Length: 383
Image (cartoon, rainbow, N blue to C red):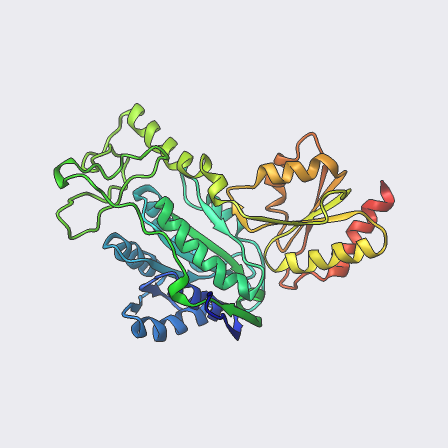
């Protein structure tokens, strides 16, 4: 018999913190920044209750470095920030991709660039979350659209980070982080998340950067007999030798990319509604997905064949699902609280199929369903 789920009224940032605890996160390092502050505040109280550790670092750079260090010792670790902090963390995040350190970084987006507007929502970090660090690598970026998502997708982020030995970004926004909704919490002992693959060979045979058949290498804890080097230079499989060898470097970069891209079916999560006969499909994520779904239902009530597609995992891009929608639709609308960032990969996926219309909105005010409906009507009339 399944245990009863607890129902609570929660803020989005609170649900994120509880999701982290439920997923086994036992280390959090952070630095105060609006609108993510509640996550750190709650973790500072909750982690000692479950035997974990919280530390406020001297700045954003120090906090992500501390999380990397904690993960290397074997802990599930997390950090939370907003746009300016994400920018400061990018160099260290690149290190984490290169060294293949599992961690979760929560970005509760606000208006930018630079300091921008600290208490106003935006979705301007979409491209930075994917491409913010230099060089070639593949990333996992997840977008919640409700308070329930903040709990569930934090658990998913922890699971994916450990399973693929990679940083995962939970890309929320101020609306979702600060709103309050009903959340159903399962018993925490029923929540099962992965733990990074560990070596099974003797210490002298351990190769920390030799991938398995899926490209994911085993990861030994620092402080054990398995000695290895968190090498941020191009390196060979034993970790100790930095290299300028073209063949070794190419093999490393391809593995960092393909361990995500070639296993994306395990990672992807997409939700769609009313797509079977949809002639106009709205692709939306985060808080904008809420208004977009309302606009689609409204359009349907007017006899317009509209459909809704929500990529929960933004990166890697759900290309197959987008193409499938574009095969029957004449138009795709991508409303975003930025100048049209995610419209680019959507347009690439739809190339030669449906026309893609970017619907940007900036300045810190969320979309209404009416604004998106107006675009649906415009395309319908012009068809």
